[in-house]
Image 1 (cartoon, rainbow, N blue to C red):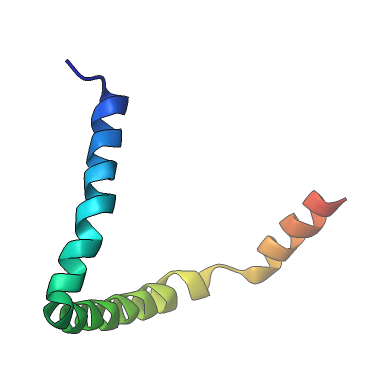
Image 2 (image 1 turned 90 degrees about the horizontal axis):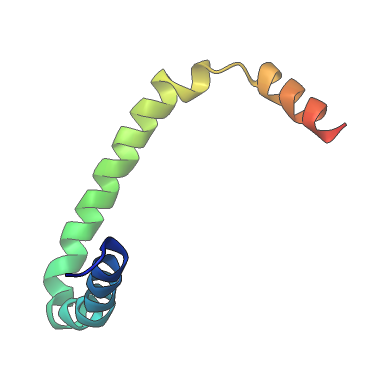
Length: 70
């Protein structure tokens, strides 16, 4: 029986070997899908950024950075 570490290493080895070959074979099909996915991710990030990240007061973050530096 494999331990979790060996099983994970085996999966990573398989992926690192097979995925580049599969990408090269199907590059023309993968690229448009990846481009659409990136556009969607950017849209979702912008919404997240506007609703969450811009609401975090930067002064408190800057103060913490200054305190850590001292």
